[in-house]
Length: 108
Image (cartoon, rainbow, N blue to C red; front, side, top):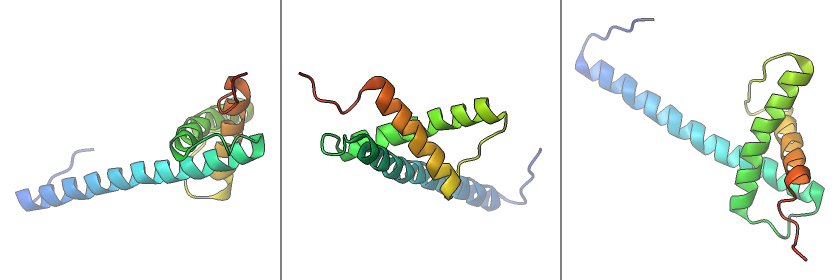
């Protein structure tokens, strides 16, 4: 698709809007990942040993893993948005990640 702008100001405005949407997308992924990681850590009993940064990492990676699992098992595409289905998929993926890797467990 070819976009044609009437002026440099229109082009600059479109680029600024795209950049702002990208930043909000990143912020949304961080918040979504933190919530999913926190819920998963509570379910797995590791919430006392994980900090906020670890919850974000576990939640974002868990959302990716959960999306892959759903796509493989249901043979359908997963679109992540702010809804209950996406949140459930992210939490399930984060639980799977915590179970497989043992992140958050204390070393003896």
